[in-house]
Image (spheres, rainbow over the protein chains, first blue to last red):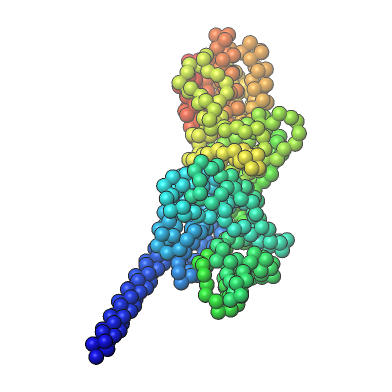
Length: 428
Length: 110
């Protein structure tokens, strides 16, 4: 009898213990689920909505697709205009999952956006945020990033890839998918003092840039087979002519079909940036010319520019001022940029948008920043005056904003200025 | 660009019509040089029909003034339009050169 009672007590204790463990496990599960919700909230609140179309000056059409996994990871993306002609976009993937990944994603995205905003250079922005993140990275988390800046006036895209999957450029004209394979540095957060590089590529109007996270290519089916780069490229090759929404939904459908019921293990983000073909209306907003490096060519351009400006009802005074600026900058290039007598091309891109004229001049002459030359001292007496240096002084006076940069990748000087225009029509 | 010349007493009048930029400035300079070679000491450059000038145009004005000065002569400039006036002002030329509103004023008491 006593024996029996002892046994009974033992059973009862055993049941209590099991109940306690079950309770702990339930609480733990609940806690984890809450944590996952928190992580997802952090991630989703940081990202723009699923499918957003961004149109600016008939230039760019952006379409994004996000599908978070149940156990949320740290994928992120963003896009924004650096100025009226340069669009920045990036995509990234933080290693790991849950709250730590979501927090790291929030930090990285914020740092990156602010670094690019101030430095306006993809390589320097990555170099800086890598140093910042690597310094106190005690959890050894790392982040893959692809970041690009597309200049919609020149069509040049500067991009840098820190350990991220290759981006694809969909070349519509030639029906080709080009893979941007190069890496410009290791993943962000791995090691301090790494200099990230960048590549500059000409993007044609009509082309699209296709960026994604590895949730696509590493989607697995129950047999553990990956969706793979090959399947993605194959799909892009046969479907690139679809509009972005159909294309992106199609990819997701392909991925789901491949998974065949297996759970999606990782977040998926796809970003589709279409550098739009110009419509009849927008063409007149641009004047693009390749000039020869001689003065006659500058004169012809000057006349063409005047016609272009008149069509936009730019008042005569402003036209004359801008023609002075062109004379100064272009004659500088023709006279001083080249060591030899060979023919060179000077690209001039003028755009007129919302009462503002934006001009970019690119030449392959020796690197030279015209705005750094010494200011003429305009207070000197006539006899002491040096002849020279005046031109740039006039340019600075006549435009609202100017900057210069040397494009290492394409070995070109890029001189840029803007001027606010009050057209005659609007004054009435 | 076109240059018309005339005179009023011992004063040479140079009227610059059109645009003075890198391409046209050398022509303007050589026309003016011809006058300077002919013992001209007083000169009025009339800008009333000058559309605009870039720094190459300013250089012509400056070198003309210096050459006249070197032989105790004088240069006056007159009637620049708004664009040219702004250019003269910002470059400091309005201060160091004698700029008059009208040709009549430029010829007075010269």
